[in-house]
Each structure stands twice: as structure tokens, then as C-alpha cells.
Length: 265
Image (cartoon, rainbow, N blue to C red):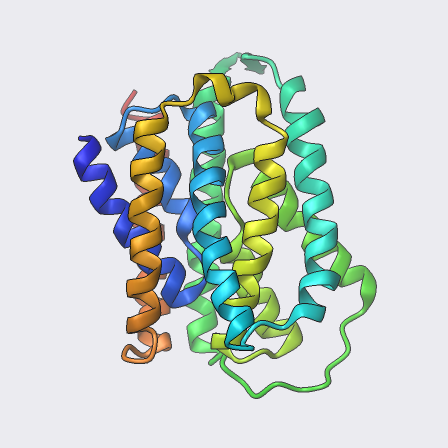
């Protein structure tokens, strides 16, 4: 199953290279259900693998002058502050067993249920955005600073809680609020994801002694290979078609996780 997981890692990397999102939202289910990694540890694995892969993609974006560095600062700074605070101070306060009314949830189960809700919500957002034709020309539209801070903070909260780099939230924000072209939004998103992932991992340093480095480095190698394949394909596949198909794929995976953790347990 580890080999299958590494093969799937290549596909995860391809999605990062093509649309600048989807890496961690697919990595956690692969690590948990295919590679048998404990859910809480899988979020740290996800941040590590996708952080390394996104960093490589970010370097490429800077070299090719596709990344919008001012947007990285205005949107990314609030995000990385919140992700670090969440991983370091908020998540450790969550008890292993959580009681909600007459129901009892283990932290790992609740984490996966939360993750499934995030996946479903993000997939519907991606599918709807295709209908609105998000690839519009760049403009000088001014977004209120409080909206920028709030959006960045929300991305950081999701990243901190479920180990998702936030690309599936970053891309729509950069396109709809900043009117960035898709390719420019992807390059910018990879920088923000790499920064968020790095700070998320720094908040989990105590877990390093639990790492299965052979598994983690094998998975990371697959995602790195995949992102270069994604870059190669990015000029050959319609972003509109790809984004719609990817949105439906995330929706299917999110619903599967929700069913598995609730009705099928």
C-alpha cells in the first residue's frame, strides 16, 4: 500500500502544478486510508510533504516572474500568523475525546469529519467558480484591508486545524478579489502554501520523533515529481475543464470520508 500511496502522491503533485491547490486536501485521505498513518500525525506529514513541494514550485514561479510577491505579503502574513498560533496553542487544547450532547467523538474522528466538510465546501466553491469564468484580466480593484486580513486568517485557521495548505481557498480569493490571471494566482498560491506549511510544521516539532521518514520522504518524492509533470501539462489542458473536474473529484472524496467516519463506522 505504501507503493500505491507514492503513486497517488505523483497525482497530488500534478494537481499542485496545474491549479496550485488540492495537495494537502488529497494527501491526508491518502496517508490515512491508503498508507495507514494516524490521522493527527497525517496532518503534520501533509504539511511537510506539500510544504517542500510547494516551495520548489514557488522558486520556479519567482524565477519565471509569475508570482505576485506583494500579494504574498498582504494575504499571506495574516495566514501564517494564524496557522502557527493554531498548531502551537489551539490544537493542543483539543481533548482526545470530545463530548457533544449525547455523542462522543474521538479527536481523530472529529478531525476527519471536519476535513470532509472542508472538502465538500471547497469543491462546491470550485465548481461554482467555473460558471463565473474566474480567469479575468488583472485590474486595480482595491480590496478593503480588513477583508484581506480576514481571508488570510481563515486560510491559516483551516491549515492549522486540518493540515491543509489552503490552496483551494487561496486560489479563489486571489482570482476573485485581486483579479489575478490563473497562472499568476497558481504561482502566488504556491508561495503562500509553502510558508503556511513551514510554520505549521514548526508548531509540531515534538512529533518529529514519531516520523516514519522512509514513508514520508517516499511520498514527498512522489509529489515533487508530480508537480513538475503538472507544470509541463499546465499549458496543454484547459484550466476551466481541469478545475471543474477537480472540484467534482474533491466532492466525491469529501462525501466518502464523511460517510466512512459516520454511517460506515
